[in-house]
Image (cartoon, rainbow, N blue to C red; front, top):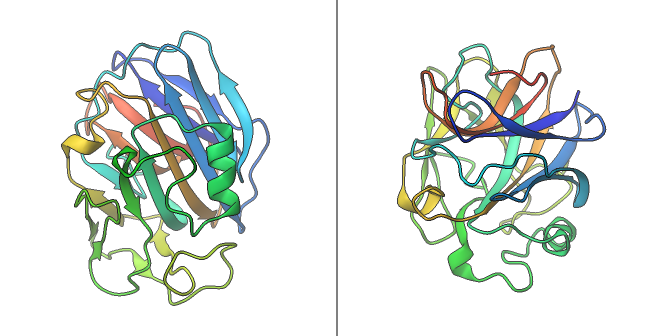
Length: 239
């Protein structure tokens, strides 16, 4: 199946970009998306541009002042992510293709060339291995809370992920596809509407299975209709 990134400007419809080729399950993939208002949505796989949508790109999102979630997006209880996530980064600017390639090739690099610390608004390496907090390394205190009846599982040092995370081997977070997630509360630095900014989201994912359901691995959307905001998923393009 393919990976999709969707944004809503009116709460009833979506503008989307989808990877040009399928992404394999049971292997680590680095996925990045960029949003440039009125211009483009782009999606990259392993540091290489996969697809671009330049058709009817909205001026702005309708809203994204909700909690940012890893492993879900608050929309539908059937769409929990089943797999692993590591090294999530959010920038308040659209990174260039060279920037994204640089981060993929040099994963211990925090900031790519020409990007300032103030433009990295969230960075969750997910290397803690214990506890219920996913700490934000950007300096903005956007820490995440592990949530669910059974919280996401820490994995001890893993050599299977094709990169290092700054503190020994990465310790990716495991999501069981049932009800566990990480919640980063609504915060001004992640509110791209109020800040009127473009943005980039990048992370490593390992998909355990494709079951025909649109599984959402990161999002910032309303719990009920009109489901405004954005979401990152694999599977079907649906609301």
